[in-house]
Length: 327
Image (tube, one colour):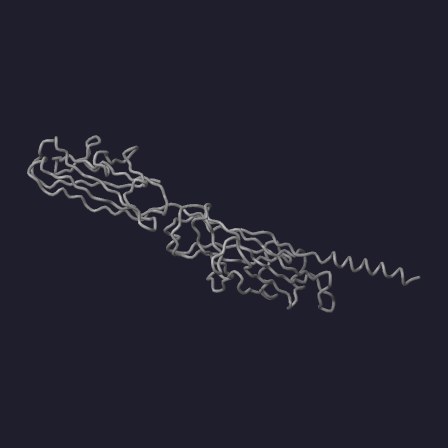
């Protein structure tokens, strides 16, 4: 009679042990590479830190055994090129590779489908997070690769971090892990990464304008020249020419002492004034050419001495015009 009664008790005990072996919690994670101009990103890595949290609940670090570990591996990503995850912009036209590392100097990189990094019990003692107990925070380091010319946009991607853990949360008097205290499992933790690339311009090349010399204002020839502007690929902006240092109203002048020699700068058509505001500015789309990398645009202009003015006294007449860009 006693034997049949002991069997249900044994089954209940086994079921109780199974329920006590609750898995550790591994929440999704995220990291931001911040906001950076396209040219800075092209020249140097943009860096960020991320974290993998393995929360195994209450318990004492004294329960950790030498066989306990947490292991990380990059199993995949939303976008991959070769063995690295890449971040893509909203249209998918541009992308930049990102490294995922377990050290700030990126000495150990987790590549897609590559090797893993294991944290043993002694290392885990130093990785207890702010929640304390047996909740571990494993730092990750991300950085972009330089040398990529990108459009201004938000870039994003998800890195799938395969996380395997084997943690003892309670030990018995014999120093072995109690069956109810052993927590183990394998979870893919999604790490969402974002990067904001912003517009910038790094160069305006404008050769000096020289009308030469002439005895009368009617004898000065028009001068046709170009300026080049280097800005973020695909960016839209306008280019403005100031009225110079000696303008009278909106009429530009070169000066020699107190004497003035009026001139004007026109857009490529030779008739529309190139100024600093409103419709007098020139849009980037009006460039006569764009380099193959989409960065540098060329703009033509025509400069002309005003022929209706009286010829001023002989002298060297100069002016200084500021070229500005506006996004």
